[in-house]
Image 1 (cartoon, rainbow, N blue to C red):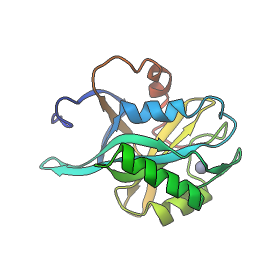
Image 2: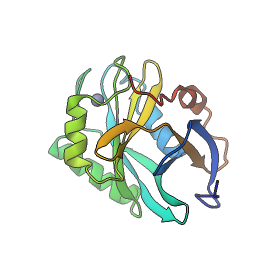
Image 3: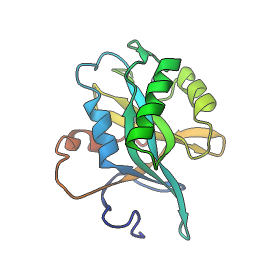
Length: 188
Ligand SMILES: [Zn+2]
């Protein structure tokens, strides 16, 4: 595999079986932000934006998911999350200050105890707000720590078979050993 992303970042692992196009690279910081938004909210759906960049080199198209921005004012229940006008304002303000050089590449949300899939409502949200072919959706069931990344393949949103994990080698991401092995290449 080509060394992408390049130094000072490096691929530190993989989940599932990365294949297909685009290849997906998920930064440890994005995973950590998602995990940190779970405690205390485990029974409610939480979510937010994913930021990063779609890139291309002579090996093909790849997607760098560099970070996550949690929604702090979403209206959530145990089975749904609604990004209100205020939610979008907060997300775009925080994205602009924390990740000014990154683009929005998708969104994430949780399914407490429900499993990892995209509901009809999720598909509606994705088709209407994340319609770019590079946009992905991360779904996490925090009760199992099961998760998957859904991406566009032709006109369908399917679970990516896997992704590469990248970041700086600082050793500060201990909690991720819980989450990383639970990647579900086949959605429930
Ligand atoms: Zn959902």
